[in-house]
Length: 368
Image (cartoon, rainbow, N blue to C red; front, top):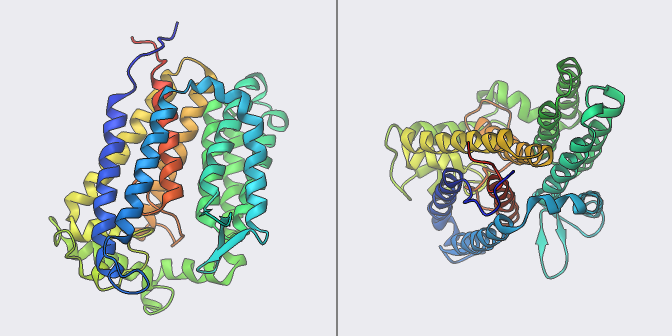
């Protein structure tokens, strides 16, 4: 029998708290100089907002640590409806456009990016549906195709915002959950090849994505245009050396050469100001998080808990891999934040909520 009331995974908790602490420090370090000028006129603008988001996120995480994850089963269908309703609402006049992308839902008194909640909702539903269809998972039509249509439908709506990075993360997460549920490798391999083709089609279907992809292959060809992000990111990381320039002393982030310094490219600021050691520490912490998360998934007391844990850790892990890959020019540029570290209230709150579920599952694992 699983042990109720067992202490949650301490290593996972400490790892997340370390990443969160690094994120708060780096958000302030990367944004304070920029925030001194209009329209903010306050060097603490981004820091204060991140602290509020972190406080809310930690509170929600604490609640989910106490909330029996098995109760999420009864909410799974409703969460699926909520997920698609929000994705459709973003594309209506309720959606708010920023920097050429309509990814925010404006409720009048508050606007937020619903894709973060959508990912959680789809993971919960997929974990529940896969746990009750274990005997059909090796049948492509009944066990794999429905989840591909589910992920594909959500992915298309996210692409319309447009947000290729989040769409790839979501579809990749469902793909890993199918693997964890026991789908045939042949089916997954075929799906993976089709997925690569779909991503390439999405890249070449939009001019700005095509330019970003070509800049990824040869950023020096257009250093002041499509290659600007990559080149300044690499210069930021390279100028940090082993120990870094020191907090707040990064020239590329301080003097605005580096775009989106407190969000998408915050890892470049870490590389510049904390050096190779700081960047390596962040990567090691994410590896530790993924290891502990999948350990919880493997040892979970039931299939729903196992698939739910696998989905949560996969979603966060894939997002971290894509973000760091973009910043280090290992992957083409796409707008996706670094979990726990980047500035962003919605992302931080719902990511910490997922961690709370992970920690709750770890409480029910029977000690060996």
